[in-house]
Length: 184
Image 1 (cartoon, rainbow, N blue to C red):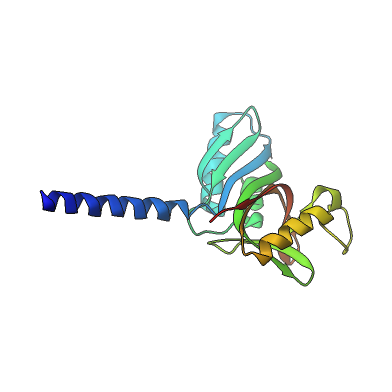
Image 2: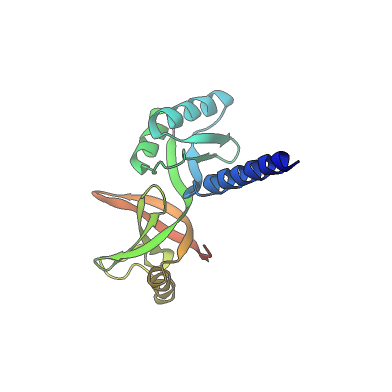
């Protein structure tokens, strides 16, 4: 009886540890590609193949009618926006946009606020819709900047969702559509 109980406790502990470890892998989640030109199942198949081969995405679901492709990253892999864009182009389509959710930490680098995904280290320059056209000045509303500074000071994990775009020679930008502080 004691051996069964011990075995059961060990199995329960291992299951709990494995479950906790898998929860940690979702640092960039909910990748959503808006794609023009998808019209048939063969289009979807070609796009799926290119995204897996060229951009390293997985769990790909193509929704033809909506012109949307949802995907995820393998655990511990970062997002290379350029590779995603090239994969879509090589498949013969036009990428209108990339939306995603990232869990990570906030940091200020030379006045620019950035988010870094917690496990793979992908970095995003942050801005909001109100400041997307601004020059080198402020890229965040005062209220959002204050929330992000609080998250940085308290080393709080955050969950950010928004539209991604590329910068030449810089990390990708993330136009924040939603922001949430997470309890660890």
